[in-house]
Image (cartoon, rainbow, N blue to C red; front, side, top):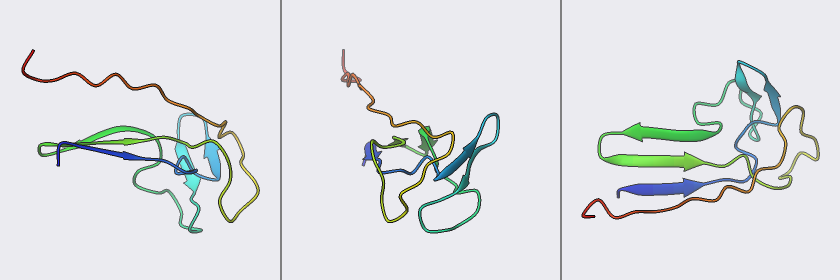
Length: 76
């Protein structure tokens, strides 16, 4: 798989500037993939902070995000 898109409050329920996600939706500390683009081997993972809430109805310093991605073929 060359591209994986993910979202839904993965930015962390609690997010600190310059630190990132501190408290994730599964009540885990410092989630590995909290927001942005990650690369591992030939796969790219884009994680959106999401638009709303999951089980926890609270977000601190984690504004909703609706990303616009432009996908281009590597053959052009």
